[in-house]
Image 1: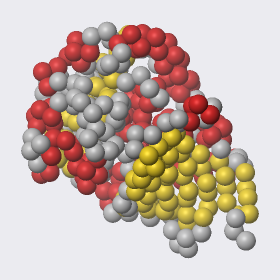
Image 2 (image 1 turned 90 degrees about the horizontal axis):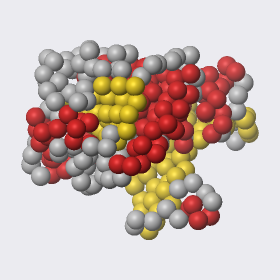
Image 3 (image 1 turned 180 degrees about the horizontal axis):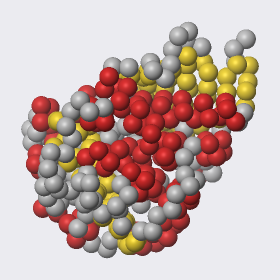
Image 4 (image 1 turned 45 degrees about the vertical axis):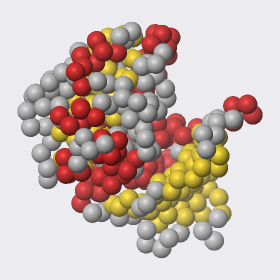
Length: 340
């Protein structure tokens, strides 16, 4: 009989750090670039439009010896039943024989791997002297993104937090997010002395930012072209289905654009609307980020170039994080072992 390891949300939170997620994301992108990892077609299903849906992202990582998937379900009415709106579940399988090896709560893991993706973009595409960060969005991803970027870009000295539609919420959530960032860094044995502020004017904050991260569900552009300084880098996290858009398409037209997966970015990512409206064409995209990490493609060319990383989110991030998490859990005998 086969045995699997089950890792709960508490197990994940105890075992996984934002640094682990950052390193796992890099491994995932590199395996994709070298052909050792592949992304399989995404599945999206609406139970009731605007009220309940799910998506399944899957793929394989040959060097890690696994394939698997993550299923995320959203039921908007769940809070009325005292349940979370989102549930995430990952499963890992042995690539040699197909046997299931793990079931993992993917809630906290999703936040870590997504925030880490923003940091990977900044690490490889931002100017080396970047010192100011603007975080657009005050939801779950804010603390993960900020913490990961503070690890990846040690010269960051100031962080502005913005809520584009409700500016007052940035001030309300500033201390909470700062405390979450400090906790995430402390779990890595790190501490950063950074100046935090709430941005009451998005345009002014964007004009001063060397690095901008967008993590919202917006379907209309939030950041205008004229707000972006020469040499700025932008990591986009919010666009993960057709119609979502956080950046003025003119930004993409003037920038060097890097993506996690070309086909996914042009179908559901930040690039989708700009390509659909003929503002840019597919050949405008520079390359996938894994090629930059592996050194087969140049990233930033100079200090005045605007760079954009369109992170639509790929299954390989989840698989790499789960694989690292599983190895740590096994070494520390964490989680629950069950016959399956």
